[in-house]
Amino acid sequence: YFFIPYPPPENSENIYLDRRSDNYISMFCGKNDFLRLKYSERAKWISLRLPRALAKSNIENPLFDAQSNKKQQHWRADIKSLDDLYLLKDFIIASCVYIA
Picture 1 (cartoon, one colour):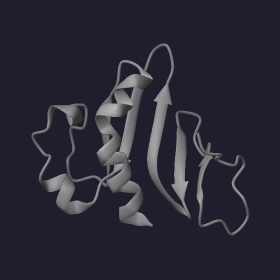
Picture 2 (picture 1 turned 135 degrees about the horizontal axis):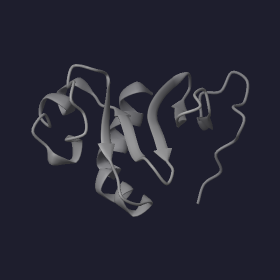
Picture 3 (picture 1 turned 30 degrees about the horizontal axis):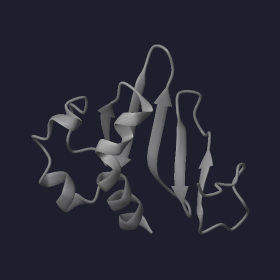
Picture 4 (picture 1 turned 60 degrees about the vertical axis):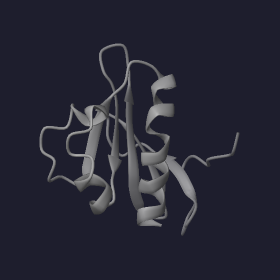
């Protein structure tokens, strides 16, 4: 495990969590939110800020069926449990590296 400070440290270029919406938690790298997570009884999803080339090559990927508008920066994927995040790990890493 690694430590993710909350609330965000001042002038941080590290990865941290912040809640800037009532609907989800965001993960930031510096000032850029690359991951959003909603996990409740009613809704479970993750939204990633995919690099453009990766987004273009995954338009038909069933992991992102929940994302209707594929022109948006953040792409949503429905999940059933936190274990499903493993299926998205390469996309999560690419999203973090892309905006770093």
